[in-house]
Structure formats: C-alpha cells, structure tokens
Image (cartoon, rainbow, N blue to C red; front, side):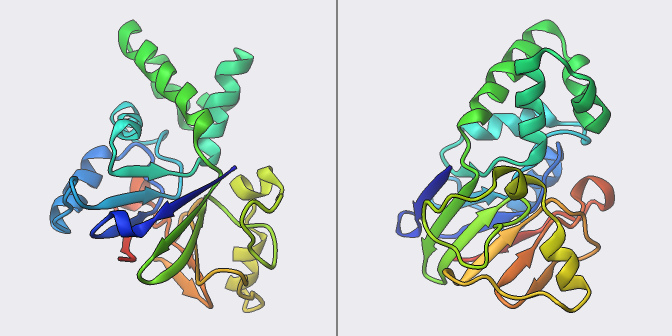
Length: 214
C-alpha cells in the first residue's frame, strides 16, 4: 500500500495534479520547467487516465524511470472493470477511450492497466524540503504513520477533509511536513496548514499544476 522514495537520488522533484489523458499538455509543462529525464523525478497524485484525449500515452509514462504515481480512483475503476468484465461504470466516467482503441492498442492498454494494480496507494517522499506524503484524495487519519492501516476507499474518494477546509473548519495532519492530494477539480490550488490540493482541472481548464518540492 505504501512506497517510500529517497529524494537524494534526484536533482529536482515535482508533484503533479490529475492529468486525465492530457499528455501533450504535460509535455509542454515539462519543457517549460526544463525537466531533465536523466536527473529529475515527476510524481503524480493519480488519475492519469480518462476524460482527456491521450490516455494511452499517459499510461506509457508508467514505463519511464523518471515517473512515479499513486493510484487514483480512475485507475482503480479501470482495474475493477477489466477484472469484472463490466465496463459500464468506467465508460460513464471517462473510460470510453479504451473501447475505441484498435485491437493492438487495446491489448497494450490492457497490459498497462493491469500494471496499475501494482501502483501504491500512498507515497512517502523524503527530500530536502522535508517528509512529503502523496495520495489521491485523502489520508484518512489525523496522524500519518508509515504502513499504518487506513481505509483504501477513503484514500481514493474522500472529500470530507477538503470540504471542511473550504468551510474554514479543517486542520493539519501530523506525522509529516506536507500532504499532497488531487481528485477534486479546483479553479486554483489550495495550500492550507500542511495540506496541498493540486487538481486544477487540466482536462477542463487546461491548467495542470506541477509543484516543485526539490
């Protein structure tokens, strides 16, 4: 469920909001920030697929040494749909691209989506700016602890903490310096206490957030 990353192995490290099939937008953003694939690392908060026009190229990022990701609810929907042989929920939520692929590309996508089942739910990053915890929607506890058992569905789907923050009632999570989440499209990123919400709706507004932490 957890993966630990040592930032000493990289020059610069970025954390990226929900990509949702916007591969070309990501490539432009990486060029703008002079990303070096031999020295730098990009970490995704999940939901790299669905809704946008380039889900298969986004899935291919999983084969790049400079790219890491936690699983999002869209990756989990794809995994569950393929296992169950029922595409209805996934296609209603942006997975129709998979059914429109030619046979050879669909076979490649199926293999990459199976590989998503090995993605961690939570990444713990240690770098020069401190201990960072990355998860898709939430870390459903008041205190973070390595390998702590937490509700997996809440990690992928929960919005209660963000809603509380937006109403002025939120609070920090202890146990790490920073927590990074996506899942909920926002007009602009929200940074409050030690919590960062960086899904700025790349597939809707064209605004893809990359936050450099090292």
